Length: 301
Image 1: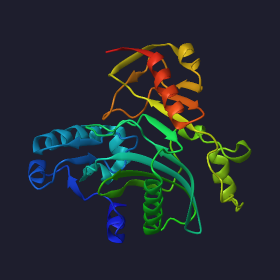
Image 2: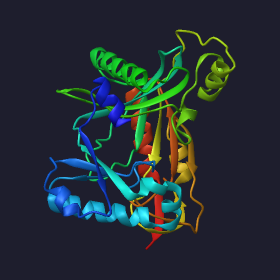
Image 3: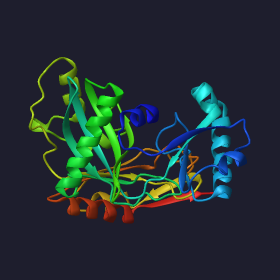
């Protein structure tokens, strides 16, 4: 993806591959900092680490090497587990676009804010809120760069999900994939006649026309509940209080009691999800933060 976008002139970070069977201290001397180390095949920000100097880079690579050496991870990655992608750290706000492609034309279904800063050293995503509160010019730039990236990759039909960074230097593609938003996050989206994102994707797949003005109808958001420490999840308190917050439409704990939880960058899941709707994006964000504040997780180290 990085190679194709660079060849097409789509704004994206500089990048290089570093093999894990080589002396990474040599590679560290030739990089520009800050930069980000990431596996090429894992998801959910697992193994993604910002580094600000040579020493941090070497330590980060050793952590990622340990993740990739786990038998189940190595088996999944194959040859991809033998190297890591190193790319420029792009400062700025991050936003996401959910869309659908028809004959190569991008139709935007939702734009998401990510109000919590994603500055590193790890990149645990928390809150998504739609509609995005970006200025119109920023929204236009986000849509344009996503459409350009999709064209460069040859994506023409079906769902597309893009993660984009916006700063004073421009609008930068962090990731774009021919899929819809992951996990339970899509449940915050509701379109005409109460249709879900998955319904729209299936309708498009069988050749039905998707209305050009199809958009998320009400401000909504989701919070992916972060894991604060490693250990065994013994109890979750405050669920009733969190669900009683005005605007909250659901709280789902997806980790069973008694399971071991691991924070990023080694971890590969969230504790659960909080969902909200409201009269404005600000109201939605406030409800998510209030509900999360009312939850308590007993994690035994």
